Image (tube, rainbow, N blue to C red):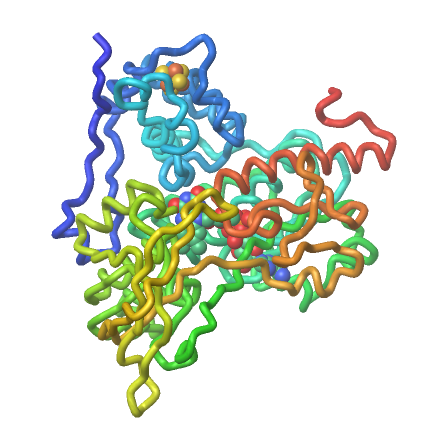
Length: 470
Ligand SMILES: Cc1cc2nc3c(=O)[nH]c(=O)nc-3n(C[C@H](O)[C@H](O)[C@H](O)COP(=O)(O)OP(=O)(O)OC[C@H]3O[C@@H](n4cnc5c(N)ncnc54)[C@H](O)[C@@H]3O)c2cc1C
Ligand code: SF4
């Protein structure tokens, strides 16, 4: 008999995990995964697939799990995604595949993400490294940025036989997966490193410490170094601030800087010489995944943390699972509250955050009710550190060093939606560099379309059959 309730997943207990950076969710065992997979109805018209931006054949891989055919499940996912252990952990499944799952209409939706994660982890333990593509077609493609968009496009093109080099500005590959999302949600040295290593073993070359726009430009890559096409996947790493008084005080940090210090520079680990000082009380401004991650990281460094968000709980854009985890761990939330100034002490360090209370007014362009200030409702919160997690925009380095590359008023690269072609011939782009900060799976989905378009562009140029025509 099919059960209505999903198989619960094991997690570290809140009172323990709030003191460590180890992964919170422990994933399904083999028996739990088989039991959860057995709940899937294997629908004739599976709505779950319609909401997967990379088109994973979800019922197919779930049926393989049900039959204990884990290798076949892994192969089924790999046709669409080479990052299952990552996506299984961080994709917002509740609004995508699981949001459409027919079981979810009356009962619990199938735990598609947790099953994908199970297969990702199983593969890394049991499957050999992927084989190199058999035929090299002799054409070269450069990819700028090694986040999910860059890695996905590089892997797809490599499978088609292209020689692909990824140029990454930082000393480690992975983009936000390594510098943004914390260890307790996405382990770096095991999960992320393993999936990136697989892409390397497929023949993709990754050059780190290579900032395109400073060390070499897109024009040089194409005109001097013989790349037939360039794919820009440089993300949206430029933090936004509120432009309120006191924002330049010591103790005000962007979430990007704070999380980079923690994730990439391992500030939480005493063996590293790159600590980050938070003091006892931390306010995090914002309500997205970045705000929740910053708050939970600050908590683990020993601070008392409050999230300050100008709308109500219903409008929180962060993943529900992460909000629940944050609450369980003891993060406080101040909804309908907006900072108006940061107040400093005589030494120039943060002393308090001056906020005003808000109420919800009429819906704005996003369809959400606009927060409106309540006059005279200002109050002070004593804080040692304020972390601004208000979103990011693309760094202008690439656009300012690439003549003819059009961007919109937010600095995002203009592209044709269905193939990522930019205003420059042979130059394609996708991911956060195009959309502004979005999600891992949207970046991957757009990157896959660009890979097909790049193949088409190069084959047409050389009068060859495209990969799809074969
Ligand atoms: C803290 C945080 C938490 C998040 N949580 C989630 C989540 O739970 N689920 C989810 O789906 N999404 C989440 N996101 C969003 C998601 O991570 C991004 O949408 C996704 O990583 C975008 O992928 P990308 O490849 O376009 O860019 P990125 O991952 O940003 O990668 C871009 C890469 O390009 C490199 N680069 C930039 N400029 C240059 C240059 N000039 N030369 C060479 N390299 C360059 C950068 O160093 C970076 O490595 C989160 C984001 C953050 C910051
Ligand atoms: S919609 Fe749900 S029940 Fe149907 S195939 Fe997809 S995961 Fe299974």
